[in-house]
Length: 334
Image 1 (tube, helix red, strand yellow):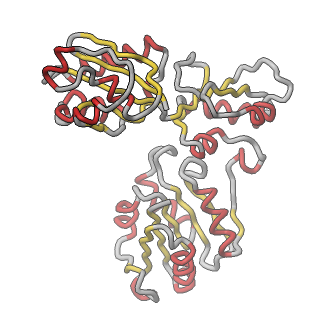
Image 2: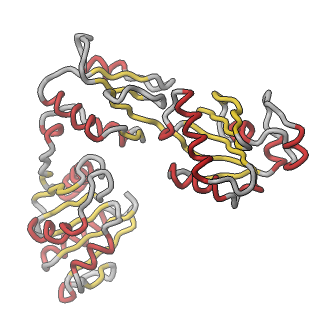
Image 3: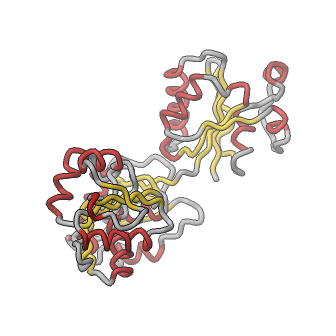
């Protein structure tokens, strides 16, 4: 975790606060306590709890040293979604118990509680059902392997099934991602299962929970001032036709003269991925058998922008240039 905020309210709580600053020294720490209990120059005076929590709710974690009631009332106005809320923990002022209060799995609060508990010789109070039952937690698995969860409802269904001692079928069609042992654990008798999980960058039926790696790269070309929605619709059409999940895109690439093209910038923003550009000289150095256009080469200095923009980012071109109304796209995989 990069950014962690620690808030304490008493003298004894301040002692725990300073210990946490040292324990979590690899993170960027913001430490607050009441002015009369400032005992370390790394602490800041806590002047307005509500505003302090609001300011730091975008941090990776907030740790309260004090009563759970204070923590709950402080975070209540800002809690939105377990996939985006920070990890929130509460530690009593004697440092006996560490309680993950919010975002135990996705936000990493449970893991952080275990770490802090070990350092303080405190007891982590873990309440999430999958943890206390020793069951597979699909959201923890996804976070650990940097996988996007296709459906929150299906993720809950997976946890519910496992807690009910039902079998879950899991498999992977991503090369190098071996789940054989996990498959045996979740479905030891290799039975037909109603609940299915697939690690994949491909489109599956809506009844299947897919855990999606960011392993696809797209290269894009278009005429100047192309309509943003038109380009987005075109790229989506290609992905659907090829059976690929557009949520697996890791970056969008093009030639540098398109760095300010609003349609491509909008596409990257919509996908929440970087938009990277390359010079014509960089693209011309890319080796491969590309679908070249003399007209495009005359205009921009390279005969194929989209395919070369893919292959400069990854090794495998899996969808060659597709063109429509002055727009082109190609797709590659890590």
